[in-house]
Image 1 (cartoon, rainbow, N blue to C red):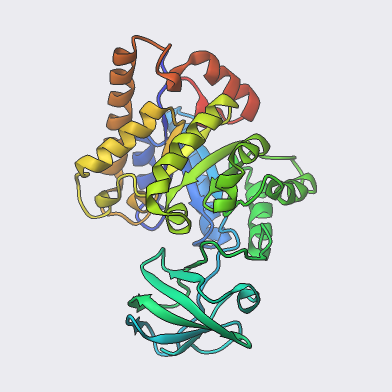
Image 2: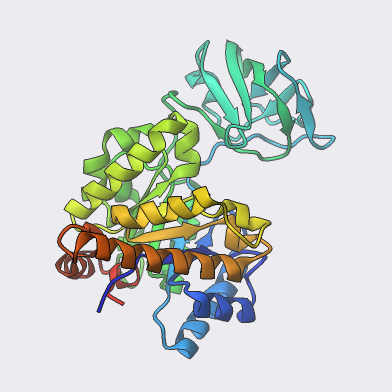
Length: 372
């Protein structure tokens, strides 16, 4: 029997029905990702039941991954709706709770005024809008808009290079871990990991709950995690190369190198690794992927990733079933071609059966690492 990289699908408005979940399983979904940045516990409980029922009906083991929001830093709300920030505008990001205007808006991070320094960068909405800190005045961080754009309520803020003093788990994350444990999902993904010690707070919650620990996957999104990559891999049960936030926190051209290094280190230590974000992004609105996207998925498989992940493609996209079918075809063709070129398992390290056995035993996550 041969092994293929597994397919992780994020469930959302486009797929959160029993029929769609069954179709995703039939198309090749191996793991359902519940994104705790969106939805209520009731929403996630319904999705969980749909996945378990579809898995039982199909006779295929389908895992469930609970992805925590983490200590995401966001803008507050604007009183009159979205605003347009143009290059050269001066805006104040304040730690005070205010109704946002064009010139002043709040942030969910109470330590921003303490941590920010002149010259620091604030990237809003995954880097679509860029600000530079000019000065700090009391509770306000005074910024100049460098790259303009439209900004709306609750958009995320990335602070590349800034040493932020936020805990590894928010109050919401604690509640979400407890809820995920009550469902008995198969694994939990921790966002914005910075050090190996970040797993301790998750384990503490798990140790106090009935049923014991679940595997915890570290999402590689912060430069601190990249700097401590081997130690993070050793501490956690698996890793996810979360290329979205990673590509905001680091120069974009660093991302492919981090991906390859993460896969290599994870494999050396018998830990599963997931490659995520924008793998088939164009299929959110198109029935066919770009050639570059196909190559991206194929190269991740040939590098030895254990899983490839779909985000908006299956959560909000117009073609969720088609995108899973497409990814399944790419994964299988890449495996078959890779084995043919390599002449067997020896050179194509992604498909070494002994390594897969070690993964199953070491991590307790056969839904990511099993032979199929």
